[in-house]
Length: 418
Ligand SMILES: Cc1cc2nc3c(=O)[nH]c(=O)nc-3n(C[C@H](O)[C@H](O)[C@H](O)COP(=O)(O)OP(=O)(O)OC[C@H]3O[C@@H](n4cnc5c(N)ncnc54)[C@H](O)[C@@H]3O)c2cc1C
Image 1 (cartoon, rainbow, N blue to C red):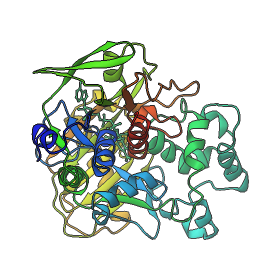
Image 2: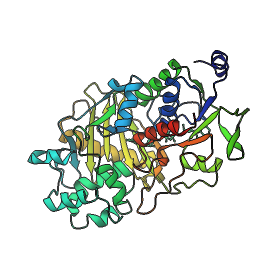
Image 3: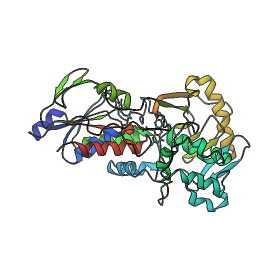
Image 4: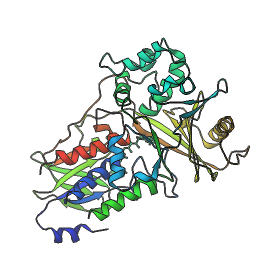
């Protein structure tokens, strides 16, 4: 990859944009600027890029990441880095949903427009329940989703709860109806509910193509380079103080901070930022499979989503407050027993041993902010004259997701003074 000094010699006089944080927000900001011909240096504190959507050193994803057709910014970014073809739709006929309570197995359309077919409806659908859900897409009083859907418990359990957990990583008993409304408003467009997953993993299908595209565009990348502090004067950032060096900023140099909220607030203490976060627990079973990629939903179970790929079987437990306190010996046998029931119900191809294969648990304790009822603390995009903020939590129009992170990165790149 190009070094910062090589490029500065090639294009003297152009200021450098320092993007700090190589999660999706930082990668998107750096890519947008580098492809516009800007000098860009991307700094990352850890040895690898991707942030909360990354591959661990052995190649395992930190957690299953799904996109939907409505995530237009994310899909455009995949196009821009040449990775769109790596993301596939595992369940084009409808999401297989297994209910642990009664052992029922059904295919569910994620789009209400698909519910005209009786064999694609979730449990508990009635016209009143659909209206109550659609009402959350309209501006109105912010209430918990459980309260909003109180009159429709079967539909809440069979469709809304899983959607809320997936989209907001917050249980319906505390999640905001207005936050869910932001998601629901985007689901009406054709193709908006198509569900996509990375075929191999976040490393080869997202992070590595993003770094390759950055390199091609001439950006410099510095992993293992933690920003410790920012010196300021007169409303401008004047020096970036990294763990191992100090980078003084010239008049044309600019900064994008693409950090998680707690880290941005440590560097700029007056920033409004979400304080409460929710965990996501992922279990990775080492079971090679030769069949197609599959994605199953489970209701009334520890496992909420099960992703089956050649590299293994991954289980997602979002809003897993109590699961984050449990260890692999407790979680793995429970999860595996549920997986066996679900794969048998749907006739998923492969050898499924009775005993759980080796399992690894990854706990992301601050996976996303808790999307509770009430005010969303929103920081300014440009808190200093030469410094813009990015990060999933800085995009108030969507819950914290890859799409929000990418939109925020692009907005930060646009907000900087020329
Ligand atoms: C397990 C899990 C599952 C998820 N599932 C989904 C999903 O299915 N769909 C979806 O859309 N979203 C999902 N998300 C959310 C999604 O991952 C995040 O919204 C998104 O990745 C956030 O990107 P970001 O760039 O805003 O922040 P981050 O990814 O947190 O990036 C910030 C980067 O800054 C670096 N950094 C921190 N401090 C410093 C410093 N001082 N100096 C330099 N660098 C620093 C960090 O190491 C990190 O790389 C999931 C998240 C998790 C954890």
